[in-house]
Image (cartoon, rainbow, N blue to C red; front, side, top):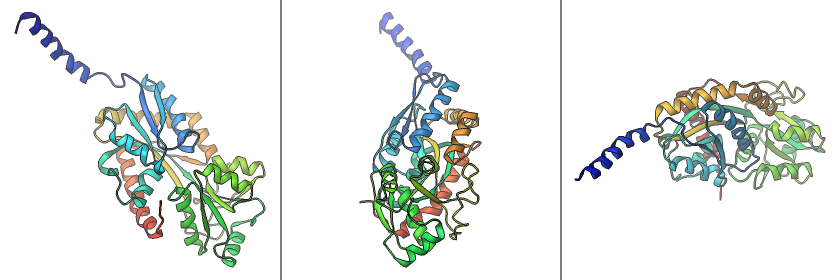
Length: 321
């Protein structure tokens, strides 16, 4: 090897470790959202992105990969390079319901994904047409008197709004007719128009329509009423005590992202969740802020949710085709 070749080789050898050990993040970070722009998940990601960007000195870009009930976006996170430049906003639909509904996922949740931290848990409400039953007890009585006549819309077969509707029917001992839509938004519009009777959604979507007199909200899940909507009773108060309906979110990454990056993301996520603006917006949505979780706590939470819900959802016999 001549002197010039030797010098170039030596320079390349010394440059490689520097590149491999560059400070993270050295370029923009992508947050993949597995649902459409404007969805609740998308809104949460777009609230967190600038806070993370400010703290870490890089742009956090939200990229929507909708489809397959969250399957497409989840797989995009799984297949991404484990370098900290692609993370995802995970949801109960992706991390709990899909494993229950899809017999052969193209990945393994616990093997292929690493949790960064929990974000929020949102209790769902039962929205009803404005000229329907005035409260939950009246609704249950009508459903029992006419099995299969009352309709409920959902975001599609196997969606969270479908599953919690089926779970309610079992808990209340009634039979409802499911009407799937391509998203909860169209279902809520048809509810306001009187084409269907019920939809399960969150306060973020249902409360403005309730205030406008377009729909009623009959009940909210959880142990207590939401302080921002104190006139909405819980399901237990309405006579269905053993019923829960909620969604939750987390930040996740491909398995193999270096631990220091995961820990740094976790710290900055929790700092973002402490921000008064984030707290106020979550309160408006009726979302419980899950600030303070560790990666290990997020892993354990997801595993516990799967242990609880996967057998129950499979027992419902829901088909996604």
